[in-house]
Every structure is written in structure tokens, then in C-alpha cells.
Image 1 (tube, one colour):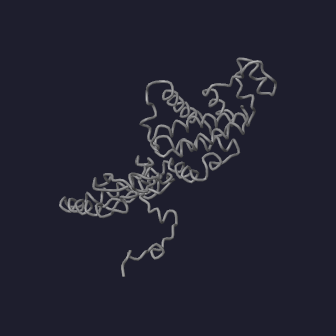
Image 2: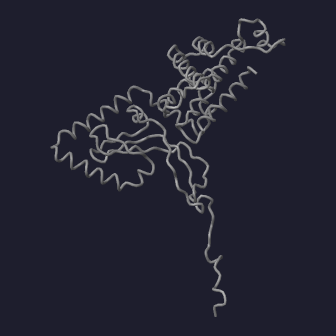
Image 3: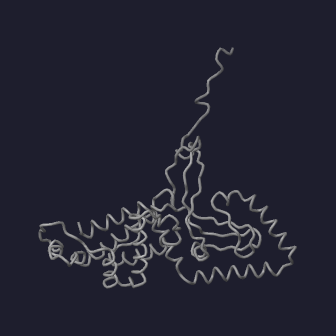
Length: 308
């Protein structure tokens, strides 16, 4: 019940349940991930010494952890104590990580035990990069890697999001914005207005980018811009009122302004300007191509009936 293998397997199962949710902005994503994080921390304590999970208020709990039979159901330590002990045994898990984990545990408990939708407005960029970062700290202590925990599909995204937390990214992003803004504002008002009008026309014609991104106002010139992203995962294709579609969950990787030409490339820079939330785009598929159906019209042709 408290063994490392059992706890880690359950932690990984619940993390993937959250991360594989068809709606990346659903409150169920952080809910399952926060539950998983506590189990991951418990697995780290168990790997160090299973007795660390036993509630010391009753000696029977410690005896159970040491392999002796217990006359009553054993009780483990609460989440607060779990994360506090991680600050002692896990290098890199500091008071800062403890405070972040406890904030999430309180939000999780509020979601589960009150009428408040505590996780409903929590965007993925607000918690997911830090979740992966803290998880990785615990995984090192558990002699595991991100792929063991979140799976091969999510591990590359997790690494990208962890990189996005560097303060250097924020400096780079805002320097690029300032350079583009200064260049744009150095022009005559008439030239700026013309560029914005031309940008609006270019945006309307750029169907391909709009199919994999979303529109925003440029942070440099306030003209039309777009954020596009790479696919993280896709849902199982399904029928949608006669159309064969799948939902592609994407991570923002590029900002392009049609007016001033500002470009920010890479998720870390998008995260730095609060455009790091994962988003979903609907992809319309051709069943013949998707299922690799080879179709020869001649094999299905019949001559006109009674036609001499």
C-alpha cells in the first residue's frame, strides 16, 4: 500500500490521466496532476524509507511500515508533512517548492471539498511549467526521468516548459518587443496606419497560420498578430455532424506580427509574455487518407442499365 512501486505507478497513471484530457484548459487537468504530485512525493519518501510515511502519533503505523501486522488500518502522514519532509531528504526541493505545492494542495482541496470552482480559471501556463519542474526535482530523487512519469508523448513538452521558466527568456522577449516598438514608432503616423491596414489584409489571407494558431494584438505596435503552435497531442478522430475531425492540442511556439514584423520564436519567449497557455484547434480529416484507403473508381463502375 505504501511501497515505492505502487505509489509511483499510481502517480504516473493520474498524471497522464490529467495531461491526456481532451480539453487542455479543463479544471480536471490540474486536479489530477496535483493529486498525482502528492503521490509522487510520497513515493520519494517511501523509496528513502517507508517508515517516513507512517503517522508517528500511533506506534502501530510505524510497525506496519516496518512490515509487522497491524490490528487496525494504518494511517499515513498528511500532505503538508509529506512535502515538508521532501525539503529535508530531496536536494533542490526547497521552501519555495514546498510553498508552491501547498498552494496547489489547498486549491485542490477547495475544488474537491467546497462549492468553489477553485481550478476552473487556472490556465495551463500558470501552473504546468512549474509542475513539471517540481516533478523533475522529485524524480531525480526517485531515480526516474520525466518520460517514466508523464510518458514519451508529454516528456518533450515538459522539458520545453521547464526551459521557459528561465528569467533570461523574459529579458530576451521584452528586448525584442522594445526594438520592434521603437522602430515602428519612429515612423510617421500615416506610415504606421498604412502598415496596420496592410497587416490586417495579410492576416486575412494567411489561412494556414490561422488554422494552427490564434489572433492577438501585437505587444509592440498593437497591430494584428498571430500566435501559432506545435502539436502536443491529438484526440481520437470522430464524427462531428458529418465531418471527420480530431482536436489538436498545441503549445505556443511563435508570434508573428503582420504590421511591424515582430517575431518571437520558441515557447519560452511566448511564456515570458503570458502567451504560454496550450490551446486546441480542430483539424478536419479525409477518412480515405487517414485510414490509407486505396480507392480505384474503375473497380466500382457499372455501365448504364439497359443501355445499348
